[in-house]
Length: 171
Image (tube, rainbow, N blue to C red; front, side):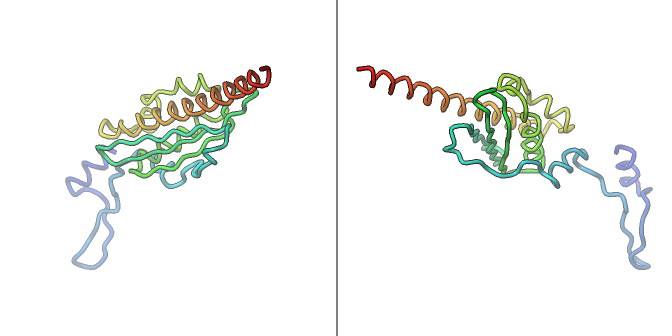
């Protein structure tokens, strides 16, 4: 990429003649890594689950500085404790969309504790995010944590609620 950029900068890139007086470089510098472009052009697991479903945890996070907003949802099998499905909706740049898409792929099939161990640095490294876009991978990590926290709160309320109902019946 550096070689291509230098060739373009110094006018050594291949050109295609549009007319006798105009020409454009055929090589356009790629600003994002191919994995980012792939997840942006073909995002995985876009959508949403019913947030009132007791098996669904929802994480909604945002970065006011750049305007990125990410909603990541997980569906957990209560018996196994594994994340069986995940989806996202993201309003933001290509790196934020790619980070969300990758995060949903990575959490599927994992125990919640395993999913909590996914770090933004791993997402950023996999997508080859530049330093200026690291906040996107941080949002993805925060969204995973928020979704798991939401699910665990629902689980606690559900279990706590059933215990309270049992105690009332015993009286």
